[in-house]
Every structure is written in C-alpha cells, then in structure tokens.
Image 1 (cartoon, helix red, strand yellow):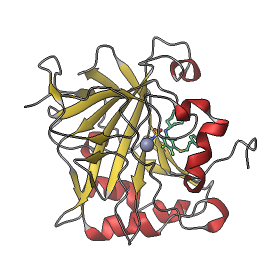
Image 2 (cartoon, helix red, strand yellow):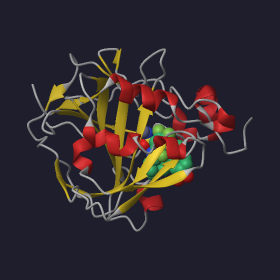
Image 3 (cartoon, protein in one colour):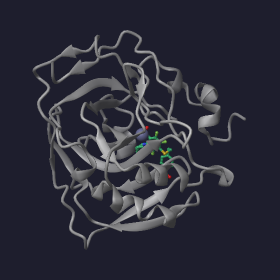
Image 4 (cartoon, protein in one colour):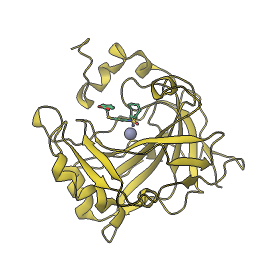
Amino acid sequence: GPGHGHWSYADKDEWPLEFPDCGGQMQSPINIDTNSTIFSRELQPVVLAGYNLDPSEQLSLMNNGHTVVLRLPGSLTIASGYPQEYRAMQLHLHWGSPEGPGSEHTVDGRRYDGEIHMVYYNPSSDSIKEAMRQPGGLAVLAAFLQVGPEDNVHYQHLLEQLHEVQEEGKETTVAGFNIEGLLPANLGRYYRYSGSLTTPSCYQTVNWTVFNQTVLLSKEQISLLETTLQGDDDKDLQNNFRLTQSLHGRKVLASFQ
Ligand SMILES: NS(=O)(=O)c1c(F)c(F)c(SCCc2ccc(C(=O)O)cc2)c(F)c1NC1CCCCCCC1
Ligand SMILES: [Zn+2]
C-alpha cells in the first residue's frame, strides 16, 4: 500500500499515487514510431572517453531487487554527442522472461529481448541528487539486446558473475573491462528525446539516447539473464520493464535518415 516507499513492477499503476512525477507528461519509456521521427543533422555521433578499464579496477555489481547494477567510475564520460559533458554513474539491464521479451522502449511496437541503460549525470550540478532534479541533469544511453548466433564476450564479464548476486541486496565485484563493448559498434545512429527515469521517482530530467543498432547476445546469455536473479521475497526477477508512456506531443529526433 501507499506510504511505504517501496514499489514493484506489479503495482506500476499506483506509482503516481506515491511518486507524482510518474503521472507526468514527459515519461519514459516510449514507443518509437519510426515514421514520426524527425531527422536532425545536429545530432553528432556519441563519443565515449575512458571506457577501457584496467582489470585491476574492481567495479561493484549489485542486485538491488529491481535490476542488476554495475557502478561506473565518474572518469567515464560522454565526450560529444550531447550539448554538455556527462559523467557515468552506473549501468543496469532490463529483461523479460522465458515467456517473452523485456526491453523498455519499443520500435514500431516491437519489444526487444532486453535493454541496457548507461546512466550519466551533468557534472555542473553540485551533486547527483541535485542533477536528478534538473532538466537535462541526467542522460541515459540505451541499446536493445537481441538474441544472436554467438556469445557476447563483453556481456560475459557481467553474466558470469550473476550467480554471485542471485538474491536481492547481494553485491560482488567485477574486474575492469572495456565497458564500451557493451554498446553497439555504431554510436552514430540513434533516436533522441526528453523523458524520465523509468522507475520511481520518475524524475522528468533525462536526455534519452536510444541506439538504432542492437547488441547481440547468445540465447544462453539472454536465458541466464532471465532465469538467475531473484527480486522481492525470492520471486524471480523477470519482466523488469515499465510499459510505454504517451508522448503528449513530444518529438523524437533521429540522427539518421
Ligand atoms: N531505467 S532507470 O534508469 O530509470 C532505472 C530503473 F528503471 C531501475 F529499475 C533502477 S533500480 C530501482 C531504483 C533504485 C533502487 C535502489 C537503488 C540503490 O540502492 O542504489 C537505486 C535505484 C535504476 F537504478 C534505474 N536507474 C537509476 C534511477 C534511480 C536513481 C537515479 C540515478 C541512477 C539511475
Ligand atoms: Zn533502466
């Protein structure tokens, strides 16, 4: 019930009762209708800096009950492709179940198997908490995960540790690796729109980038993601995606034609 500050994907219809922004007019995720996107030649390729982390670096991997989160050093930045510099905070995943796909965004109504979100904050804010409340204070780079013919060696760095964080609240460490390998090769083709966090408090302060090229993982890797983690009260952590939200007149830009 209301007031206990805790939420789940099961009670997503009640989120606005407790977190008013969740009922706002600039919510995420959205369906991207490719016939309605607007080509913008200002949208330059996203350039990332500092992503090739030395194996001596230990990164925290945690099951927070809603997803699996890899904390990222603030030294990872978006060097260009956005009007200002952003610093990395964390990355996490959204997925479905053996019964169906679990991306958050959809393209022409199609839901992909999963979705990765790399979350950044605007360093000109005094703190992350403050950045979260400023329009454009956060940026999320999103890419779709799709079943392909072979294992994705970059995702193996995360997936081989999932069994260590099976229960909610469990944490382990992952040795540094090339974080950029978790994103598609082509960072020049993407959709851009203004939206929100897809989780309470749903702050409407996120500058979204959704890459056009998908990331391929093997069926076994997708299945591992879908069947390993547990969320609240030991229930399987599956289908951790929010339904698509109305655009309310927002435009979706495309960096490509
Ligand atoms: N798609 S998304 O980016 O909105 C998103 C989700 F959909 C998410 F589901 C999540 S996880 C649920 C929110 C949460 C819970 C615990 C903790 C913690 O213990 O640190 C943190 C967050 C989640 F962590 C995020 N991203 C977080 C949003 C909450 C905090 C703001 C900055 C980090 C990005
Ligand atoms: Zn997310």
